[in-house]
Length: 324
Image 1 (cartoon, rainbow, N blue to C red):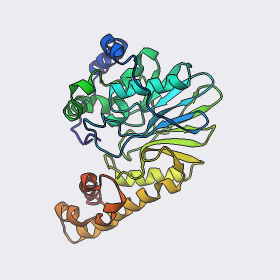
Image 2 (tube, one colour):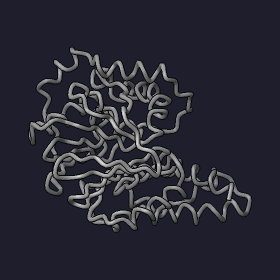
Image 3 (cartoon, helix red, strand yellow):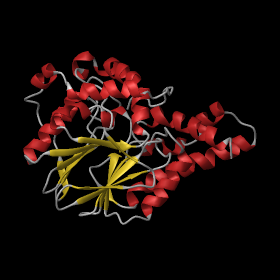
């Protein structure tokens, strides 16, 4: 995952306008170069619900940014895509996976949050003219972080693999406290926006037909969670999700699907370990480096990429706890 912590900057209508214009005039050369893209492997975790699982790695030249769980839901009227992968090429391969399943129109492309492994395939669907949907805070975050994310993507995987990748802003947003219903024919999807948790722009997609929840990065399994928002806000959102009638969850990272609510048990335990380990250090006047050196170490063998992300999680949690 490309590091999410970058400086924010004012969101301008002019920048939003030109990013939208780009989606209309998507480069013909890229479309031609990916016309025969190999479809991504997908698993049908329930009737009409298809998931591609990403690897537990950071983006590099070997995995080409294929590190997140992405997929789509097929209704009688059309298709809703949920997250699109870490490059335009991955997005095109996901589109080919859709076409290997159905010829129905792609009506919606839904982003669960701003992180690049979930949004950079958006551009591959521009020719389908879907509604691009995300959290009400997503446009601002995409505009603020987009250039940085693109620069790092080119650095990590090379310009050839990143070719055609651009930021595509949502054309429709979901406000906190105002869920959106999408009827794709014979099934209704409920989109819910949340207060600050993993990020400040987390969105879930509930398929009422199956009870399956696309959780995005609100749920990590096997790969260590990364805190880019608020650990306490995240815990509150997980409590809310535990109260919902969910049969299975599709995590942003981990297996294609898992039973709920046990899918979040390890993540919730890890959050408690961080909080309970950091609080006494703060109380005795300790520092962030002291906390980073010791907190959470007992979790190391339980999570992929632990050494890469635990220090940042400790730092982020420490700064929150300082203000208790």
